[in-house]
Image 1 (cartoon, rainbow, N blue to C red):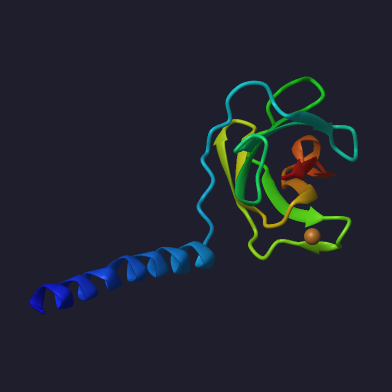
Image 2: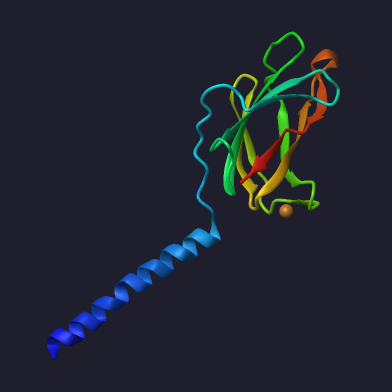
Length: 153
Ligand SMILES: [Cu+2]
């Protein structure tokens, strides 16, 4: 009798543990690893033609959920574009929607910017609508855009 009651009580524990894991996973996707090894996945030219932006994804290739992107920006002379403010908006052009969460962007090395989380929450083709701005006197001022595109599976 005592043995049977003990078994019944124990059997509840795995159910509660599994429910707890499921709740935390749906509330917030797992953060993407920030690993940007090897050659960039693509290099895009800005709308004005003045900037070259090399793009890495993490994980590579990106998967449904929270991803991250590294953008290395250089000017026409190949010099890193540092001190810029990047606004990065994940956008799904075929469905006309963005993501619920906007990424935070941090410059991790001169001209190298990391955006996270990039919330590619469904499979398909996504753009990373990126605006590069730098307030400055004359020649160093910037306001440009670029749209790296990637297929998310
Ligand atoms: Cu969509």
